Amino acid sequence: MQPEMGSEGSSRVVIPRSLRLLGELERGEKGIGDGTVSYGMDDADDVYMQSWTGTIIGPPNEFCPLIWFLG
Image (cartoon, rainbow, N blue to C red; front, side):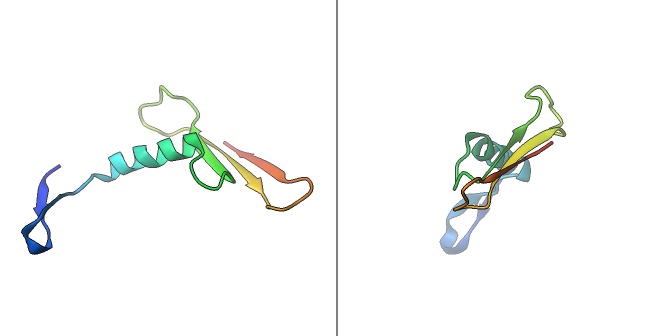
């Protein structure tokens, strides 16, 4: 990561996409958000991050909400 000069001479750091993906993965695994979608790694030892699983709960305000599992 190399700092870049922003406006007014302040420096900023450009974060590589791979690190942002890890942050998104962490939020998905912890269920941060409205709770209708969660996702994460199928295998925590998969260093290539190719195997994912997800859950969608919806629609909201239903007597018996549907739950979809994606893999």
